[in-house]
Length: 172
Image (tube, rainbow, N blue to C red; front, side):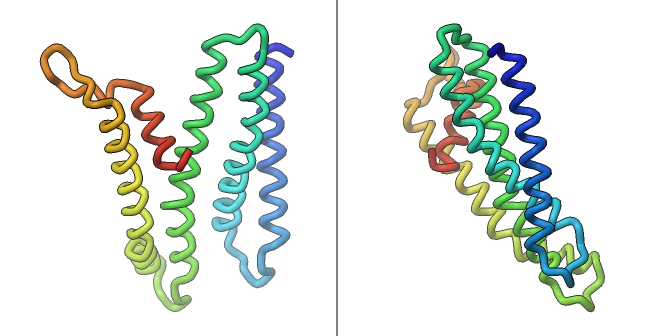
């Protein structure tokens, strides 16, 4: 199978996962709850989780293929980073925000509900930022401070640095 066929097949799998996630979220939702936003958030997060699982066979196929190309391997790695970054954003920012927004008292106006949700979910956003900083610090220690001839730290110019910081952040 060629690269385009694998990518088209993967696209259809992701679209199917999105549809299945939406149907599952609607099925398990309390019938008294009418808001659609939490269903969409839940569906997208579930799709991201399932897509990251579906990337594993593609990664194995690419790494074991006799016609392995470096660009395809880098594309799969980029897809991993993109999906995991979206997953981190969803788990640490979007889900807590939606949880506290829809968990606020009904009599509260919408703008106060949003402020309440921001205040309550600030801890998880702070935790995400802290994990990213810790991941970067671990990478700085591991790289032993790579500098250019003028002594300027080059950590953030390397794609590998940002990717490996993300890997540390998500516990890979």
